[in-house]
Amino acid sequence: MRNKTVKDGRKELTITIDGPAGSGKSTTAQKVAQALDYQYLDSGALYRVITLYFLRGNIDIEATSDLQRFLDAISLDMRYEKNQLSVWLNGDNVTDQIRAPRVSSEISSVAADNRVRKKVNEILHRLARKNGCVAEGRDMGSVVFPNADLKIYMSASLEERSRRRQKQLDEKGIHTKQKKVKTELEKRDLKDSTREHDPLIRPEDSVYLDNSSMSFDEQVQFIIDLARQRGA
Image (cartoon, rainbow, N blue to C red):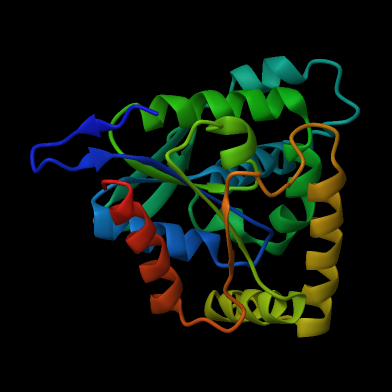
């Protein structure tokens, strides 16, 4: 990648964190980015914004014959300020709305469309030019940033991921049974790993991180240590 040297002699790396839903990518990537003073890029948030846009307009992505026209009408922005990520849709802050269960259930179908993926990837590349970055998603290391300086593939057991996701929803006031959350994650895993375009895979040159029994601080430090070893 760029490996642009910053003023303290360290390098600005591109770090990717891929993995299935509920593996803790988002919170971990944010913390790593904060520690390294890097830009945090959440591809999933962008896909969620587009999904929200289609849901609001009752647009069936598989039935519409003019998808590109709708995509061209979408203005997306991602801002990471004061350790907080916000995402914007046509000038409106929709950070909280994109985590609704309905968006979660529809996102895989939207993200499977190659035209949607192209739009999101263009935005990610634009944002990544600014400085060092930590990009998380499902194809960051395999497709979007294939030459990243450090690639992490993060995962955890299905039970642990469903427990974490339920806790996350509870904290947002969205209460649902863990069994239902687990079923939704299983469906999401299948869709993400079998979709035609850019399926979820573990990049061959990635470091595998199973955080099922790790504390949050441990997994964050694990990635920071690897980044430091590579000059960050």
